[in-house]
Image 1: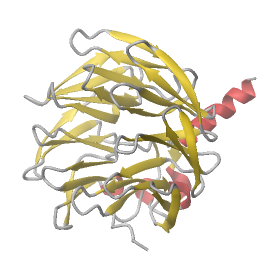
Image 2: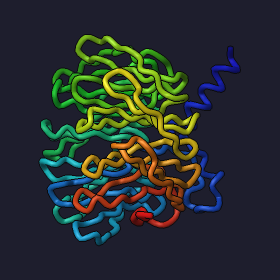
Image 3: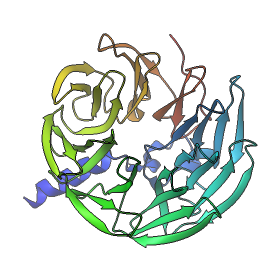
Image 4: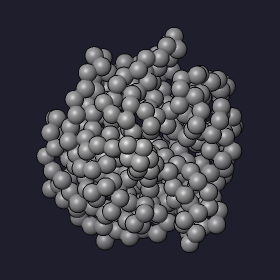
Length: 352
């Protein structure tokens, strides 16, 4: 039993993006350290027509404008996540290496300030209604809260969290730890925290459409669909070791990347309706709803698969150097930009 538990922890660590960068000696000496790959590696602002991509290897954020031109803005050390407050226009960049968050003015692209966090920050979510940013801290039980009105930071004792989600409908913050069997629901009005069972240990992918929370079970072959109001859940079968989850409200579909069997499961309602084969060990999903495309990143294979969502089949598998672990879509041009673990900053994904 102990051997099995160790094996599951190893598999969960691989799937969640815990990478020993020293194994990637060919890509960058600067990248020879351990870390986590964040699902929040890019953010798009439709109002300004800008796409923001973290550039971990160069301690920067790449900003791609409406005309496709790109600029690099220096931030803190080893940035891994970015989020936008679309009401204020502020851009928040999480820097685990320097243990702070860089705040950028989205209009001028100038750095406003850097805010210290409780520990090594990792994931971020913005509550635009409350004008606050919530930042999780790896291997810490503290959640850092940044007040957008004055950029002051405070810390809440919430328990360890790796994923942060804001539910604007219910006015709640959801926190998830990779090695947990439940979600934490934070009421920001009074600071109270309650637990929502997720149906299994070793969680990874999360997504929410306001009425349902989806959580993938790394050790199983299923995802949980949870009603946060009633705390009830039901499991939906997927491929082996489901990782990332993406929702497509336009089609009413849910997509799940299955790390262990190299597939993507398409779910409609509460049933899988298609299985699409992709490159080995897929770890992230990005939807371009306007173009009816899904981008699937496999960083260990240096591949990005492009899936036609109308036909539910892969159109092509593109080789990308630098271990692409996410893909950002420009809000106006719909050009896809891989976010690379190491090497050169992102360049457009080749169309053929």
